Length: 114
Image (cartoon, rainbow, N blue to C red; front, side, top):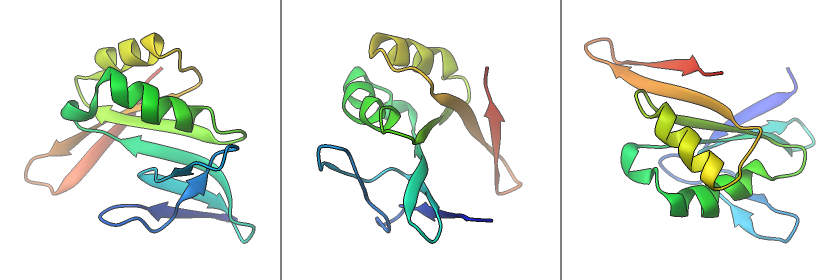
């Protein structure tokens, strides 16, 4: 009841800052409300975004935010590739999820992974 979820697509509505003052624009930001303290961030990626550079420069930074849980949503069928990228970038504690469009239903199916 004390959380607000902000989606930064198609335009950025909520930025957050690292301890070093760097500005981040995660796809999804969950804030403790009304204090506006970030508690969760998420990146929703497509196959072309699953690169070592993105893992090291975006995912790693967001995963290391103090007191903030990081969720990574990857396309169904790309979990192994995501795990390999996370391992290579030494990123731990990520809540990994897969997503897929369900044809004809205009909905997205999300699955949590262990």
